[in-house]
Length: 330
Image 1 (cartoon, rainbow, N blue to C red):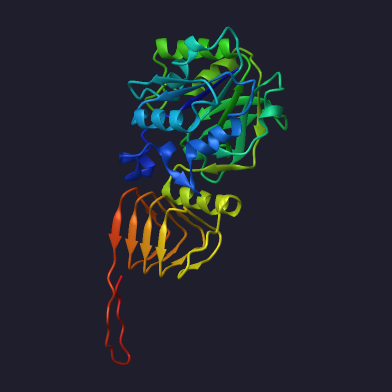
Image 2 (image 1 turned 135 degrees about the horizontal axis):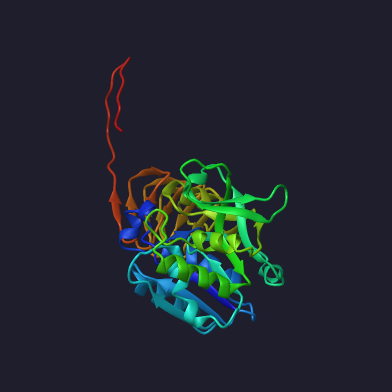
């Protein structure tokens, strides 16, 4: 069995962080997004190869994965030279999948918890779904009545008539049929939002009578935008936080603090992740992510994401203000 993980996207909604760091290497609650994905699947004997579709900053991704996991699983890295869409990215793996070999597709910006042992026992084509508040951002499924059989798939509809979103996990038993339909939409230049979409290939399968069912997943966390990244960080810290104590500072759980971080006369938490070799001094920080090698001094910081190797310095103020005054320093 093959796993295909497309990680070629440029992560526009997470700029400026993704100008220099691939989205899957951004940290949440002390781990990169790609680590959360791989840790869920790396030990399954049924998976003989994990195929990454890389592109933008792909060398960083390849180097990280080889350094972290290379002795545990066979990896293959395929370069998507042009950003032609998710359908095109998945199609690039077709030469490396055996005849009708089952494939698992996991989008690289997806953090989830799932019983893969149960998933791969199934003889069905399956797509993970979850109800969302903003369905315009996702591929949407329409079900046949109350059954979980999928009737129709639509990619990022302008006027969604369903809020049941595809969350980026697919188990496809009929891989030959999937690659056949992706080949068809590419050769016939069938695009949605100017890209070759995986949902269009899956929709072609439905139109030919291939049965695809949805299954609901609850433990799925969105990392696509700064506000959702911070929300996911808050949720995951409840499980993955280490609440490390730092002498001379106040730590308010849940937090993740790297052992190599230096915290000096500061208040940290709640809901803060602090990366390797970070220096924080004379600051109060809550609901934020501070990435590796950053320095923060003299700041009151909340709802913030500070990138790698960033230095941020605030200032102290001395005020002498009379009665019935109003001062706005922000």
